Length: 242
Image (tube, rainbow, N blue to C red; front, side, top):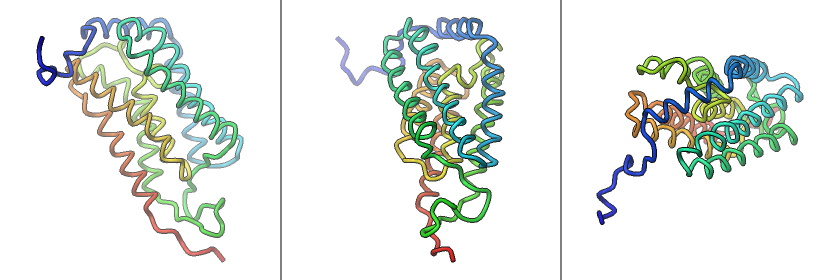
């Protein structure tokens, strides 16, 4: 029996790159035309979050994100990926928990408002916090990348359109878009970042084992989002508004 330190990450892979590619193709075929519809809804949600208008609009955005996490947990991880990787069943439960957390905090309780374009956080009139514009820019860029650029990455890496990974269908773009929306949110709890960041790390590890050229991209973008979120939370509070 080999010693444990002789094992590599790909030693635990239970399927071949060809099998995984076929899984993506079948999932995309089964779920079409959900992909373009999900992208359109994601862009609409970004527009609502950027404008930061009514309470009802912000609740709808978080309910959409929650539905995306719950759908990926059930339709991809549990129904399809678990057939070739038993660990995907456990990941599905974590994705489901993240979806329920987003639905409860953002959709039901309305605790996840949006950063304003400028000025102060109007929900904290005594200890108002300056709103960092960089968080909005990075957040919006992440959402756009997840919605519009991510399906192209597989094609640029030599894959086919039938293997494209789309928001609300596959884990990586769903996690990245969520990190972007969390950066647009007004001081969300730190633990909401944990599962999306880990999902990106796990997706990057899987892509690396499958020898994908851009395996580093999802973990790198997630790390940048975490750094941005941490920097914004460390910012000094402003004096009381008059």
